[in-house]
Amino acid sequence: MTAFDDAGPALGPAVCGSVSADAPRERPAATADLRAVALDASTTLMAAEPDEFDTKLRWGLRSVGEQLDVDRVAVYQSAGDGFERTHAWTASDADDWTTARIGPVERYDWLTDCLDGFDPVAVSHPGDLPAAATPVRALLRAEGVGSFLAVPLVVDWQLRGVVTFDTERVGRRWPDDVVTVLGEVAELFGHALARVRRERLLARQNERLETFAGVVTHDLRNPLSVVLAALDLARETGDDSYLDRALDASERMNDLIDGMLTLARRGDDIGETEPLDVGTVARRAWSSVETADAALSVVDAPAPVEGDPDRLRSAFENLFRNAVDHGGPAVAVEVGSLADRAGFYVEDDGDGFGDAEDVFEYGYSTDDTGTGFGLFTVRRVVEAHGWSVETVDAADGGARFEVAFAGPGVVPA
Image (tube, rainbow, N blue to C red; front, side, top):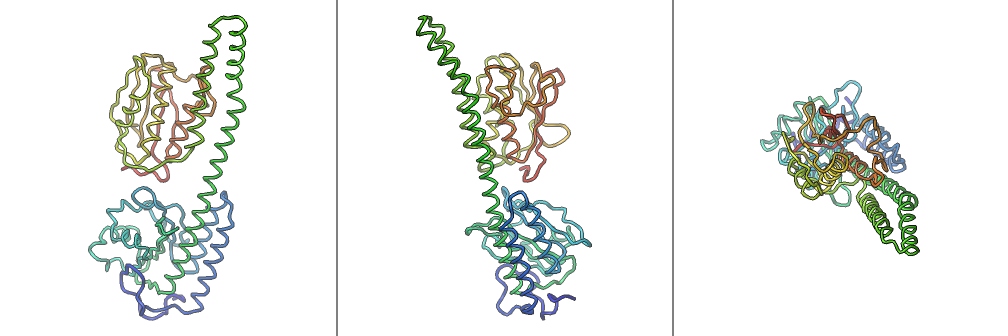
């Protein structure tokens, strides 16, 4: 028995909302100790650098969990139509949760309705949950949970996730003052997560600006020199063919600028996500690319996946341009589902990659007129979704890009 087990009668078996005024209160000393541990963990988090934040958050979860004498503590952040586990701690004598995602919202609406109202959810015995919470009860039983507390993660009056505490033993009480402290913990964790998210976003934006500056000072210098030299020669000789050279160089500069602006504005970020039919997105992208006599076939398209429709379309457009540019105007392109894992491939019957290993690197191009942005953009879009992309040789010697959906935060629709 611990300091959190001798506070008198237990709470109701399953409470959604603020704990009632006549609920038992914890011993003041025990509550003060919990608040001190929570404050220490939160202070450490607020001072953590982005590269050490995840480690210190897990340490904070451990500190609070051990003081509270629970078996597991986890942070689930909002992701699409549910909550994705991003950080967790498990006591050495307990088993980890196998459920990395709580969703979709419609399935767990009893729980999510409580959280949407910024109310905690206290469960002393899963068997006493109401009928409306049957999916929650099934989840807790599957994970061997005897008692459970979910505290909303709220930042700037918006629900950003949930912090969960649970024990394997049944009948754990969740006194009012303990829930209040844990609500403060969740609030502080939420602000710390928001801060580090902003700092990481700023770091990515600075990286994009550095790339942008590098392109401006380096990549644009060459075509600009061509334009100036060609115009001088046209003026001196009266030969209009030099103007064609200047026009070609100007068009390359325009392509470079378009690529730079896309990178600077969007970078690694994705917008609102929705269930996407990969085949449909691919066909729409094909219609917006100059494909000459090239042909597209979509075979065995994968199941819908959660993603940003504009960014995924951009990735397809760049893959298709690459196929036409390097495979010729009559290249055949195929989009289909991966056989060994969730994802899709884009394959052409062109010349393939040979020994190239850095096709996704910024600036890589086998064509003097290429910008080196196309496949670089593809990788950024794919990784922004939490997916992965790789190149392999197609069966007939052409190029094949394989995009796998497996990854954190990725949820097939």
